[in-house]
Length: 512
View 1 (tube, one colour):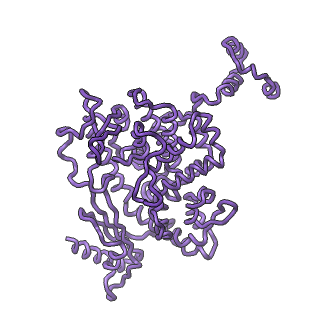
View 2 (cartoon, one colour; view 1 turned 90 degrees about the horizontal axis):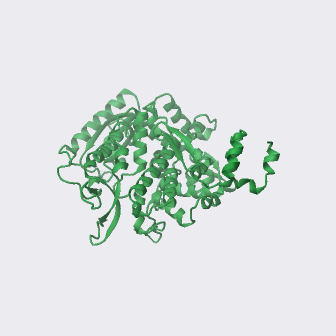
View 3 (tube, one colour; view 1 turned 135 degrees about the horizontal axis):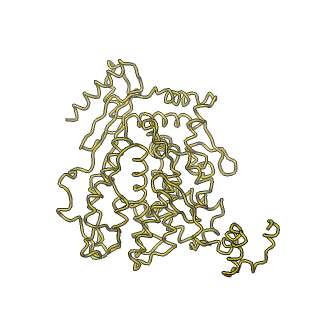
């Protein structure tokens, strides 16, 4: 049958009986049958795409998720390293935000479906599950070049006076709305059963959390996307209560795989034993709310979860060479910001730092900015180009020392640099030294996050309890927060490095 003949088939051809199906199959028109069936049921989720993921194996994604993945705004994530400068230390850390986002979307659906199957009384419906999957898929749409370097180091340097700290989660919401608009996805979303705008509110809240009152930034507004009976769904993608969410499940497994570090947390077990129970509210014991809980015997698995997080920070995320590279990249980006522009909405040229307000321009921001500067011939980019050339040739700022402290370091980094530089007799200035003060914790500053998790027993699976005594090893940590101070010297001659090391040792001794 030719394309012309196929296109001219009357509408009644789609009303296939079993005999018609058999007849077409017997004639060998398998492809034609599939096309007709798909046209007859365009919104059937059974037409899902399979991805072969190195972490989760063969995974199926809802066709709406595939529609989102196939947009330029999502494809941009292929060119943003998951771990930023870590790739300059660990050769295997070449994975990107693209595959991580797909993994989070998959795990979000897996947990939501598991809760639905185990507890039908929760009334989790297909809309809920699809929204949770979309939120997991799109939670990192707003990451800039080199991931956390952009919002954690670059933006604070070039826009220090922002009234509210800018985070990539805010850009994720802006990019998601931009993606939906420019790709005309609203009709598609409605076609798959989503109710707009309420479900879009829900997706945004799953990613960002509660909105704040524009007149009082400290006041949180109530959720708009779902009623209190389903507030537990907000713990799946970005868990503000205790940090146990599918985002971390994926990046723990994925990062450990590529870094060659052991991951002791088993998310399969967590999903197996996860169920929703009513829990007394922390601020109002007379009221109850539904939370995702786990079996009491899983407390050890959760300590492994937070230990893995801490281990990744110590061994990779805060590696001294990685931080040296990211400091240098940040300096280069700051120098280049005024001279490197991108075409934004209406063809307007936008600076890199201003692209956070223009998603057309922001779509063009990826790790490739590094190469744009490195291979440029512009005189205005000479300073930035020199720094990146030094990275390429492994002429990095040297770490002259690092120290851990159980006590909070209240002195600002610049002040520490001035103390280390000393007086005029010292051949160092504060401009030659870079100080990083990093808080290391289990995700909740000085608090033990396990205190914010509720458990249930096998005998009474509907009653939420605190971590039961005797179930936790006595070898667990007593402190859940410490401070890491790293000092780098821009000058790499032996005399300067030696002086910087001596000054750092004297400063460390003064802390005791």
